[in-house]
Image (cartoon, rainbow, N blue to C red; front, top):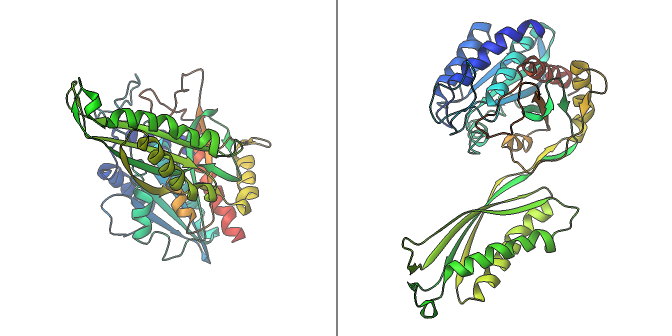
Length: 385
């Protein structure tokens, strides 16, 4: 793996300098295709404009293991003063997807060198549009988990919470389900100087936002992790006019399916009761976006072995669950899956900023580790499935 590091660093920096937003990853797609073609790795045609799927066929028939890395960037202006700073104003790899893509490419190069020893196939899924929760669904709809059918899937995500050289392994719930809340509160508008002649939807909405927090604090066990947050509130166009309508959007996060199923009813009850106290009405659109990332328990021992072989005995960290979401969960609905946290932090270099921060950066020593973890996961899974 170590001999791959210079090439991986060069490739990652190229991606970092040329980030592309979701569903616009045309250059990134071409760079990955070029690298796979140069290595002699077969490319499957799924009929999508962005994203790449490579296939490494082993010497004999057997299971098919998928490895996934996302390739899109974020609409953030980079503030890092580094030679490989983003050359595209307002777009940046601020969530480590350049590392994910590079780690997956490195894994593919390793496995391609070993293909005569592999009993089965490995799919390399370079996925677009993770940041808008559309990429995994797009590729699944285009058959990425079929022909040949995938028996298990592995992926990883960078984290500054652990230094380069550490990888976190967790059984069960790793990342939360992601749902969207859209609310419209309707009242009777009028002059701001005579509010008694109106039904003020702004006051009703403010009360409702506060009351929504009672769902987590008074309706859910404190032993269960749930978040209900309102992120946008839009109403009115003038400072002296009480509007007719207030529109709000938010997010709900949870792990347990039984709780997730009840959340729309809980949210609806709170918003109705809240606004009715002011004579207003409200409508709710509750959208289930992504299931939680649940690491398959049958793969935990395998994942632990992988990390200890790559990073050393006792190096597999046990992370806390995250309320963040990942569309990798959609692959897990089709096949057993496992998702690692790849340590990329470095306090000495200042690589401690969280995801989606304009100063987010990663310790590149993690690149060959990420490649090794993915490659060895595939090798061990081919032996066990």
